Figure (cartoon, rainbow, N blue to C red):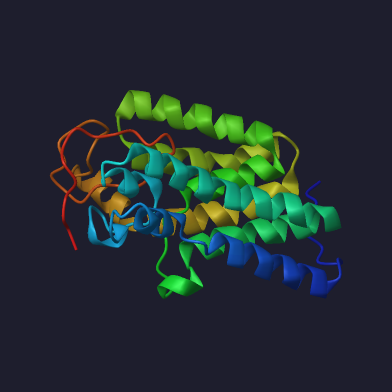
Length: 226
């Protein structure tokens, strides 16, 4: 039988975990690292996203890789630290980190699309799910060459995978996270439907997508699409 989140845990702990996760998730590594490296404001290039794929369009692969790592680990760290007070607290902290990345306080609540942080939370809470996500993403990307579609399918299947693993609380959590991730990908979904979404390694005729957890580089120079 499902084991829903009971909220029987002390409310102050849950609130502190949510706030801790949110503040950690709000850290805009892409923006911070590009500025430290003298690359300017990453929001002024490509898709305007603060995630690793758009950072890669600056031409600096190291900064892009560090951005990916930072966005992933802030989800993992939030979960691991909060887990000291119980699994429900860890779940709430993971939710906070994801919300912080999507809606960061410091950037007027305009953040990334959440794929890397989704992965980081998944890694911290249930590492087999992390490996499964990666396998689904890679398989879908190999077949379709769409990074956005790969992220959508992998995230959408994650709650069902959690049910298959018998992790009902995690299924509930990742169902919410996946729904938010899909909402943030509405422009990508529209382009997929219209057949105008850019493919991995293909020519960019439309604003690029930012959903590649492996930071696959494209051959064209960065676009300026403010």
